[in-house]
Amino acid sequence: MIINEFASLEEINQAVAELFVRAARSAIRDHGQFTLALTGGSSPEGLYRILAREPFLSQVDWQHVFIFWGDERWVPIHDSHSNARMAFETLLDHVPIPREQIFPMWAAGKEPEQFASEYENQLKKILGPKGAFDLILLGMGEDAHTASLFPETEVLEEKTAWVKAYYLEPQQMNRITLTVPLINRAKEIVFLVYGKNKASALHVVLEGERNYQQYPAQLIAPSEGKIGWYVDRAAASKLNHRNRDN
Image 1 (cartoon, rainbow, N blue to C red):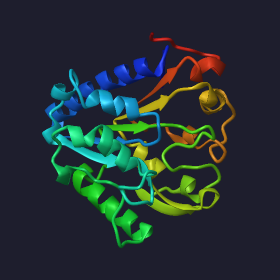
Image 2 (image 1 turned 135 degrees about the vertical axis):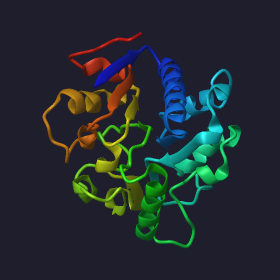
Image 3 (image 1 turned 90 degrees about the horizontal axis):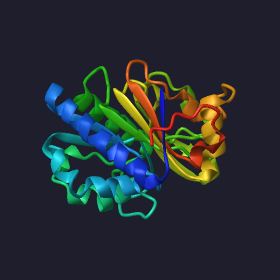
Image 4 (image 1 turned 45 degrees about the horizontal axis):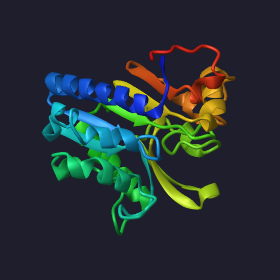
């Protein structure tokens, strides 16, 4: 695990954009495609905008990129709460990715549980039986959730399924998420965390007592791949061990 600390969110975005390009080039060179799971929330919006313009736009062979999501609210893509909507508006509508290589976590006329099963089958077609993404981007909430892995939810105990849908009672909303076993098979995982409001969660996840039911992000620990935390100084302010890259 590497903690990369930066002065600002803008610096985080720049560093992760550079990582994105390296990961894409390496994956396409090695096995002909780059498989990526996007994150939602506010954290990646600036990153997506940077990737959609030069100098990064032309550094990625977008024709060989396959886009999935780490999680989603079960709402139509045009809904303001949709993670996919934000990604399309800031990134996907501005880069030459074939539309058949983009897989939002939504389909009209289907129940979320049915769709979760279908999404898992689609993942198996693209990722193969091992199920290893080249890169997964993740954020983290103030309650230490990541993807739709929220505290005290049954999905935290999932051991076999790659994708799960469930009703999140506190939000009165269905959610769909990649599961811990699938996330942890990724070749590289990147957390983007910024702001003073995330400092307590970051500290307890990285340095606090082990209690994944309360702090689900503690479950993210790739079995073979790399994990990097890209954080700003405000988010890192309560860490005891701080590795400043910038």
